[in-house]
Image 1: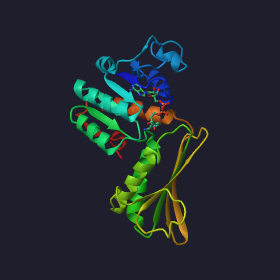
Image 2: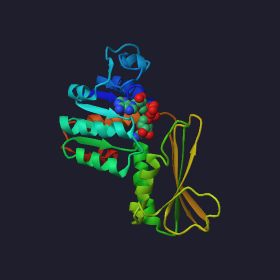
Image 3: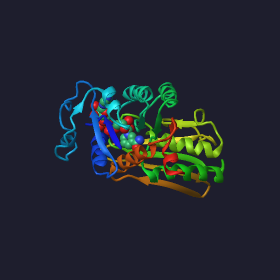
Image 4: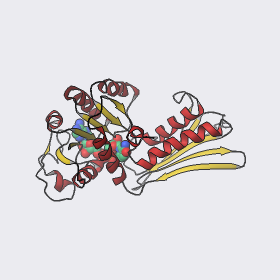
Length: 265
Ligand code: NAD
């Protein structure tokens, strides 16, 4: 299966090049960067520290979609909307890992998924995706006596907060509890906040250094605390999961899929 990478010179892009190259059933079919990037014209293998692979990084995503079976996109929201449109126009699969996507942009991705297979996940680690299911189940069984608080920490370069994964964990908890996530969250506390209300899901965030990512979902009641914690120690887990999703996408009917679909969870 020929896989293309957009955002090839990014932190995740380089990981994805290494992961596709190392996968026996996948072949790196092309790589693209944003117009003006220093990486354009360079060899994708060299950018990723593998040595030359005879794949030059280009600037034309439409040509990339023509050349491959699936494209993996860990870039930025504005770019991902364009890529979703190309996937729809060309009937190619898109594996979408970009986070920080607004509701308006999500509507465009949903529309594109009517004509293309799009596998979208805020986190491609199988263990994190399992934690979505565990959190949903815990919220359902423990009920409203347990306050739900979600804490996450990431490296200093991350630009969106709370992380896409933290928001997905919150959505899973809200689904389990039977509340409307968009109306019942607490984002950021400062000063005289008053007592914690019962019901909403609280978020807190830390940023710094090179932290790969940690998520902690706490269920707190009088006298006890349950924690469901995931700690990532390298980013290869996300790249491996995204390549797994690309291979899974082959031959599927158009639609918006999640990593839970890929893993059967
Ligand atoms: P990064 O800034 O290192 O890389 C992003 C790359 O995309 C850059 O090289 C940039 O030049 C490129 N890019 C931007 N616009 C482009 C365009 N129009 N066309 C082609 N390339 C373009 O960032 P990163 O740490 O690799 O993260 C990228 C995204 O992936 C973020 O949204 C991050 O939150 C997300 N992410 C998701 C997961 C997951 O499992 N879903 C895991 C890690 C990171």
